[in-house]
Structure formats: C-alpha cells, structure tokens
Amino acid sequence: MKLWGGRFTKETNQLVNNFNASISFDQKFYRQDINGSIAHVKMLSKQGILTDEDKNAIINGLEGILSDIESGALTIGDEYEDIHSFVEATLTERIGEPGKRLHTGRSRNDQVALDMKLYTRDEILETDALLKELLNVIINIMENNTETFMPGFTHLQKAQPITLAHHMGAYFEMFKRDRDRLSDIYKRMNYCPLGSGALAGTTYPLDREYTAELLDFYGPTLNSMDSVSDRDYLIEFLSALSTIMMHLSRFSEEIILWNSNEYRFIEIDDAYSTGSSIMPQKKNPDIAELVRGKTGRVYGALMSILTTMKGIPLAYNKDMQEDKELSFDAFDTVKGCISLFTGMLNTIKFNKSVMENSARHGFTNATDAADYLVNHGVPFRDAHGIVGQLVLFCIEKNISLDDMTIDEYKAISPVFEDDIYDAISIKTCVDKRVTIGAPGKDAMEKVIEINKKYLEEN
Ligand code: ARG
Image (cartoon, rainbow, N blue to C red; front, side):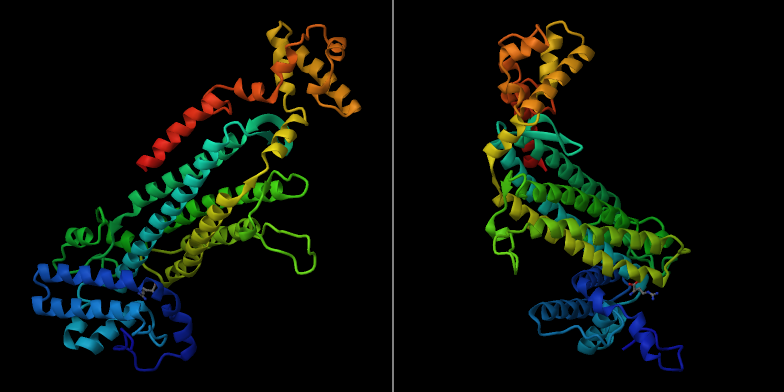
C-alpha cells in the first residue's frame, strides 16, 4: 500500500499513519493528479524512456480510474497515504507491471507541486468568472441609477450628495482590481514544476518543455529546488482572496446598514433573507453577515501559510503538506461568498425616494452653498463660516437648507439671491460634479461606457 516500505523493518505506528496521511484532503485533486501523470508518461515515451505499449496501458488505466472515480464506481480509500499512492496502487492493481513504471523520473515532491498548481490555476479562473458575474450585476445597477440621489458619507456622517450609480461604481473598481490581481498571479505562477524530481532534477533525459506544453503551462520552472518548495503563488492567491473578501465584507456591512430599520435604503429579497425563531417581525440580512464573518477564516488561511513557510529550509519539507486544507477551505468559501452575494445584490430593491430624502435632509448640500458664495466673490474661508451659521439656524428650527426663506438667507448674508435654491438642489449638486470619477450624470455615463467596454474585452 505504501510507496516507500523497502528500507523499513517495522510497521509504522498507526497514529503516525493517521498524522502523516493527506488522503482525506488531497483526494480533492485526483483529476489534476491523473492528468499530470498522463502528461508525464506521454513525455517519457516520446523520450524513449517508456515503450509505446507501456504508455498506452498506463494511459488507458489512468483514464479508466478517472472515469470510475467520477461515476462513483471507484471510491478513494482512506487506507492510502495520499492521492498519489492511491492512483499508483490502483493503476498497478488494474494493469500490473506497466503501472510500476509510471513514477519513473518523478518524485512526489514535484508531483504534489504540480497537482496543487493545476488545482489552484483552475480556482483562479473560476473565481475570476464569478467576479465577472458580480461586475455585470453592479454595472446593471449603475446604468439604471445615474439619477438615483443619495447621501455620500464620511465618518458615517452625511457628507455630500452622490448617486447610487456612483456608490456602486466604487465597488466596480474594487472588484475590477481584484480580477487584475488574479490575472497577474496566473501569469506569474503558470510554469510547470514537473520534472524537478525530489529537488535536484533527474538523470533521465526528460523533455520538460514538452510536459509543460501538454499541461498548458507557459514553460517549465527554472530551478528544481525552487520548483518543489515554492508556494508563493498560493500566498499571492490567498492574499488576493483576502482582498476580495475585504471588499465583499465592506459591501456587506453597507448592505446591512442600508437594510436596517433606521436607514431603509434597501430591502433584501425574501429569497436572500432569514427570519427569527422568536421575533415574528424580523427579516435578517444573514447572507451579508455571513460573508462579513467568513472574511476572518480566509485571512486565517493566508496567515497560516505565511507562517508555515517562513522557517522552512530548502527544499521540500513535510510542513508544506499544511498548504492544502485551509487553502481549499478558503477557495470554496470565497467562491460561495461571491455567488451568494451576487444573487443577493441582483435581487435587492432600492428605496429610491428614501435615499433621495436622506440626501436632502442632512446638509449634504452645505459645501455647494459655500461654493455659491465663493462664486459671488466671498473668500472660501468666510463662506465656510457663513454656511456654518445657516446650518446652525436650520438645526435649531429642524429644517433643511432648502426650506429656509430668502429673507432668512439674507439675514445671515446679503450675498444670497433667489438662485440659491437651484444652486443647492440635490440634482444641481450632483450634476455640477463633472470631473471624471465624480457622480455627475455626464461623468458617470462616461465611466459606465469605459467599464462596459472593459467587460466586453475581459
Ligand atoms: N502529501 C505530501 C504533500 O502534500 C506529498 C509529498 C510527499 N513528499 C514527501 N517527500 N513525503 O506535501
């Protein structure tokens, strides 16, 4: 059953077997392991290291194992040490002698490095595709809400009026950068470690370029010691995943706030909400809360691998087996969070009038009132002080700037004329913000065009 019994005279302690084995989690990449082996034997036979006959027997055997695992006819037994042992032992059981030639010119060190890379590479692509779906939902909300006014906040205090399109646009940029990070990582990691052997290459005349090509890598890795001990790409990917979760978590936090009884900016669809077992009136934003909560465990996976790797001398050490469980958990967690979040966002109802009303009450147009004075020759610092007095007046009377009479305005500064009302209307405040990146409708529409083109091209 073991790949390494020869030099041992005693049975391994059962607890050691359990502690050492990785089959319970590395079976997740059985497909990558089998495909890697198929590429390896094709290369071996091309190089004359394996006969055509053996090659064909092995490939048939491996393909049979793959389809039997997928159909459920073959179960991966936990009596094996790892997925590599399981595949090789099953192969030999099924095809005899040729099965024992599969591992020629290979070590489990370069094999596992390959499997994990192949697995992670697929995960990068799947995560990217999910982010793209999320971006499609966001751009759709943006297109429909360039005139849905709402307050923008700093310090969670109403600051200046913006639009829902503008607010959503901020998240669009974040997830766009996240996708960029993924494609950077892919470019850096897509080199094939197979053929590096245990650490020092092999004495067989392997064609590593060919193996790399068969497995869709850009080429072979260039140092065999680095190849078997590099997990940088995992650290980078987990870091990118942590950033995605940080973005999703901030977004979730806003969804939770906006969905609260105090804000009522949005209503989460029934299909994405949950109830309380005791309080009949409750409709809770559990999905957003769970996304926010799960961020912690993705950060945990990143911290774990950073810590695992920091003291490991070259080359392979068993510590590195610890790269898998938390990574797999993080990969699945992030994919689940993006899909659920996308579904939730796509079905949210925006209470546009509540949002707009909130922008009207809260002095989000105070800066624009000061700008009005500046445009009439008042120095900005003085204008700031005058508008401060207006705000104080309004707070005392419990009204907004728009509700003040022109006489009340003039009593504080004679510079004010009737056109102040238009100058501080929420629509004017937004539309006057025309520089690229600002919420004004024209600027926003330009950005939406740029981002739609980006989605078509990426
Ligand atoms: N299960 C091992 C891992 O995940 C496979 C490599 C084993 N190599 C070795 N030299 N023991 O890292």
